[in-house]
Image (cartoon, rainbow, N blue to C red; front, side, top):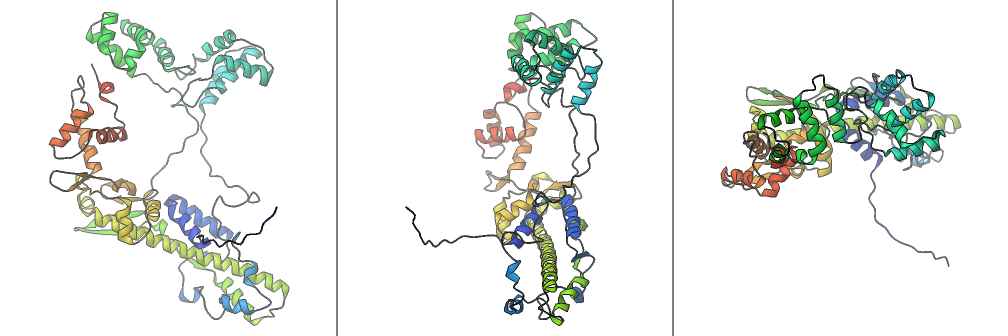
Length: 481
């Protein structure tokens, strides 16, 4: 049974202008230039150059009053202004399939797969084994390992290429591929990868043999750094064991990494330039963040001419609709760029105010605890807005280029009653571990006591969290001979 209900709902919806500003705010400087060029291409009402007073497109009585046109029965602006699709608001990647896809040209390099296929061609295999080799190479992960079971590869060959084979034959071809460069390629696990590299060594001396035995017979003890057990098991001296361990740890655990496929080098382009003029910090926007854009005078004149023409002309109505769309889109785009500049400057000025001592000297110990909420309250904006700025922007100082998120950190209470930046605590923690006795590495509990003695009230679980964030392993894995 069908029912008709009347419900009253209250919802919040972002306007197209707000959506455009949010998208422009979060993109980095390198992408902003491309985004502006794209807008210049699709919107003829937008031009490069400084805006003059006479060129300004504003809500004037002459040609830009929505109220006046709403009274005109012949032209209803609501016919083309709707929430679903407004020309000029869509960003890169939002367009439908009708637009031609634009791709950034990338310098091509030889991929790992290409290199392995070239080496496979030199083996002069028959068609069946060559197909098996191609299937194996296609099963190699980006780090250089084959993790699929050979039985699964046998099934793949049977179903996809109608090739009947068995695991023994596939393993024979696999051993051939494992002789390819880089050494250790096509291994099925880490021990096999390390052994393949040791077998390639020119010097098959006693240390190399010992290293192979450690991997084959005591890899679990080696991974846990139980060196005394290994030394007793193989009845070798501490010096011999140390040489064998040093040899193993110099091997490449990810042979596919060196010859991986195309890579892009990401360069950091600073959004802000900060200089120190005799103790006075001077902040400026990167020129790429402050482009000169203006409304096309010719398009504004076309719209102005509508008032002086026959409003009942159908073609002219279509023309004015198109012109109005482009003028609105150009105006809103310029406003969004200006709002972006203002938001960036206000956010960076607030960060400089909080971290003034650091920007004067560049001393990390001068960094104060600071979270997104602090800056949001300082500039009177939402935390999400500050987050968009901090996650994708960088500042150039006299001490180097820093991402803005570098300056945000939690506070740790000290004995003096003040808060210390978590970054400062992390630096002290790293120094403690760097200077520890590697034969007897410090546990998290001992590091906690040392930090407490230095005046930092920190718990063991926080020590463990900071250690993991610094990519420092636990004490057992830091042990050395």
